[in-house]
Image (cartoon, rainbow, N blue to C red):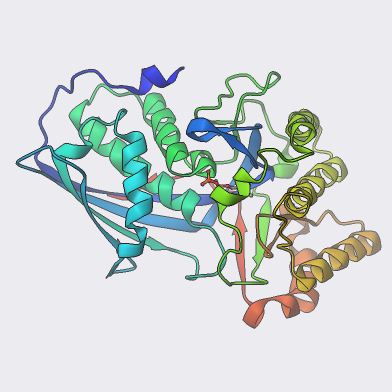
Length: 360
Ligand code: DP6
């Protein structure tokens, strides 16, 4: 599919007003998206686990306007008017205007809330942008009831990507690919797709315990972060490595080999940070406690032979990934030895989820 396929023909129905609610999850990348081209096209393919507990709930109310001049929307976050989100949403509307020609015909009210604690350092752009994209698709579906569920999901992912790249991986559940990869059929730079092959039972209900090491404001915004890959001395080799790591994971998802899984996933996390440390300007986003946790994980694996591993986003928090059948011992270890490194002992217990759901 190309961008053109997402430009709708005339709508068949007339809708004056309405209200929809979607709940959309966050996701955690195993092979990371870091670096992008024009129009939110990723510099390399990525894959993520869709999460379950970390969610954004968004209600979109809409009412037809008298004129179709300009965008008209109000924003509420956890019940309060949120002016600071306006520029981001305006930019999102500008980017998706060509694909949703009804946008200027309505006055919108967007009410949103997160399941995870405010300013936990957990990025809400993936869950937030995907929830809003799904709400807008609900309105498009009312205007054109012929839309199939496949087109619906694909276009929701396409729109979400234009809001925030990683958001396109938050529509469907399980493992989601984004970015063209020659050995994974159906992959596209334009939207996320569910990983197309069968996945070994070891990865069923994989656990993700998120340790909140540092809840402060992000030191480097994702826009600036991706930009650091332009002219980065190691960029081209890194983009190629992401393709290679996806090939390795493809074998791992088939065989269920958790030791190989760990090697790829931890290397991806450290490479992401290595890219930030070797860019100009450079950033060091790990904290001493992040490193303490990583070392403890290495020791735990050595001592027990279990398969706990870590991954990181562009920040100091640590995602602990482990199989469900090792949950009991791993959680005991996390509670007794790792929570001491979290701000106020805070963590989020999450696991792989089924994707976004329409609530109303
Ligand atoms: C490190 O999706 O937040 O989490 O497209 O600029 O909104 P924008 O970036 P964003 O970048 C996420 C980067 C990452 C890795 C990943 O999720 O793949």
